[in-house]
Length: 268
Image (cartoon, rainbow, N blue to C red):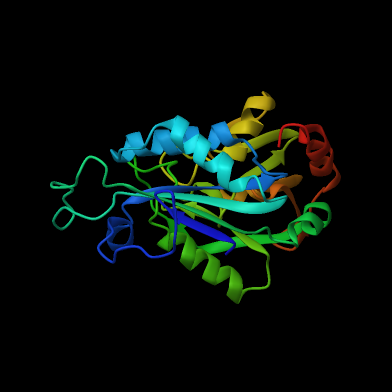
C-alpha cells in the first residue's frame, strides 16, 4: 500500500468497534488513477453518494470528498484508488441508534496497479462456471457494500482451479457476473449483459458501456445460453474491457472485443 488516510489524516489505525469491521456496515468504490487524476471520478462519487443514500449513511459533501481525492492522487502516474465509507463506531448490536451525526469514517487507500492487466487485455483470459451461487436482495442489489464474503469464496474457488476467472449465477440460476467484474457477451450477434437489479454490482464500467453503446441488451441469461456465446468480456474500473479467449475450454472471438476496446478508448 502506497498511501492510507482516515478522515483526512494519514494513518492506518481504526477502532476495533468500527461497524464496517463488525458488520460490514458501509460501502466502497475502486478506481484507476492515471497521470494524477481519477478516471471517471464523477461516476465514483455518484456511486458513493447513491450507496450512502441506500444504506442510510451520512456522506460528507461531494465537494470536500472531490477535493480530498484530487489532492492525494496527483502524485501518482498509474495506481489503484480505493475509497471506503463505514458507519463508524457506536450503536448497540445491529442498531445505529446513538451514532453521532459525523460518525462515518472515510478511508482512502492507494496501491500499486496490477502489472499484468495490460498484457491480459490484449491476449484474453480463460473463464469457467462457478459451482457457487450468490444471493438475491432487493435491498442491496447493485450496491458495492462491504459484505464481500461471497466474493472471497468465489476468489478462493478461482485460486483452486486452472481458469483465470469464473462466472457466477444467483440462486435462481440467472447469470450475474464474474468474481469481481461485470459480464458482457455476444449471442446471435447481439451484445448483451446480465440483468443485476437484485444481485451483483452495478459497475462503473458497466454503466459507461451501456451509456455509450445503445445496442447493448440488458437481459436475464443462463449457463445454458452462454454455451452459444460467440464472444465475451468482463469489465471493471481497473481492467477496463478484458476479453475472454476461452469459456469452459471453448475458443471465443477475441477480435470483436479488441475492436470495442479501441472504440471505447477515449471514454475509459
